[in-house]
Image 1 (cartoon, rainbow, N blue to C red):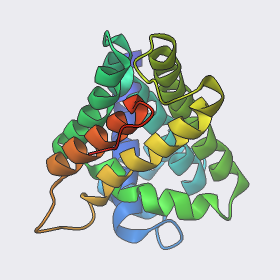
Image 2 (tube, rainbow, N blue to C red):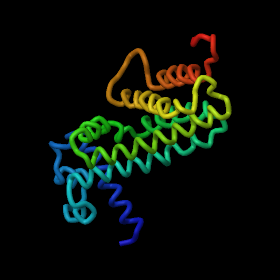
Image 3 (cartoon, helix red, strand yellow):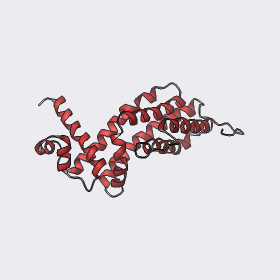
Image 4 (spheres, one colour):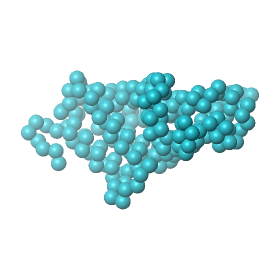
Length: 205
């Protein structure tokens, strides 16, 4: 079996696991559910993964890899303000293209509260994401774009931004007749960037 074929089969299993995790949750789902969803044999599944937990941990690793690739273009923006706007837009675009993984995020958060392995895997994803955002913020401070921030506040600012990014995922679970994802992105990103660039004595609009 060539490497590309193995990669495709493994990816197929993981995408099937995402659907199962979303529809049945972690504790109610089984390896048989993943087998049925993937349309592969049980032997083929166990060739790649030894247990249900093993599969779902691999889902987190896949999410991390895909997220890194998805958000990489933001770091290439000339200004830090544009980079932050780009991050919002890239996440929203992915939500429109395929929101399947975002649907199972709440389940993964819940598992991480009770399972140390899931907690470590999820923490690794967020640590890397936070570092990316922090570097963008630090660049904005250095270039004097973000006049209202200080280097010592960069970690807190990055975490605050991530919490606002995750507000985008809300739109994949619930519907609002007053606000859509694009309106949320425009208003929240503008508000945040205004706060970052606010000069002493000015008021945020």
